[in-house]
Length: 272
Image 1: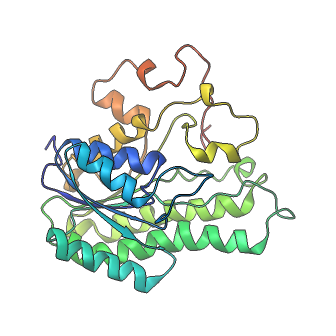
Image 2: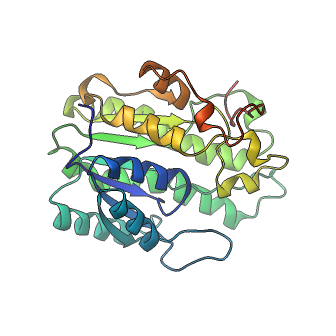
C-alpha cells in the first residue's frame, strides 16, 4: 500500500505544526481526516484553528471533519469518535499528536502544568486509542501512531524537566504495551520522533533554539505517511526516527526539509 486514499485518519492536535502537516500529507492522497483539537477560535499567540486546518485539508484534496475536542475529557473524546464514525463510516488510523510541554525543573513546574502534561500526553493518548479501538479492529490496515520519543532512561533527559519527560514517555510506554496487546488483532502501534528539532510554535519553549537550526514539519509528515501505508501486520512496536524511515524509502536529499539549508541542525530531545 502506497496511498491513504479513502482511509479515515483521526488525528489529535492537528490545527497547526506537525499534526497539520501529517493531515495535509494524508489529504493529498484523498484521505478522510478528522481534526480533533481544542482550537476552535483564533489564538493571537498560536496560528491555526480546527476550521482553518479543515479548509487546508479540503484544498489539498482530502475530506475534512473538524471537531472541537479536549482530549482530557472522556465524554468529548467518545463523542468525537462517534461523530467521526457516523460521518466517514469508520476509523482506519489514529494519530496521537496532541501534546503539552513545559521545559522546567521541579521547583519551577506548577502542579497545574504537571497535571496538564499528564492529562494530555499520557492519559489523552490512552483515551483516544481506547475510544478508536473498536473501529480499528474493523479496519483493513489499522494503525495507531504516537508522536513520542524512544524511551531513554539516561538521567540527563530527566534532570532538566522531570515532569515533561515522564509525561512524554507515558506516550511511548503506551506504544510498548499496546503494540504487544494489539498484535493478535493486526493493529500496528508505533511511535515517531524527529531526528532534529522541528520548526513549530513549540520551539519557543526551548531556550536558545533558532528556526534556522530546525527542519520543517513536512519531514515528520512524510515519515508518518511512509509508516501508515505499510502493512500493519509487519510494522508494529517500533520507535521510529523520521530520517531513518525516509532513508528506508530511498530518500537521500534532506536539505529540502531544512528551514535554512547548510545551517547546522539541532538534534531533538531524548536522542543521543
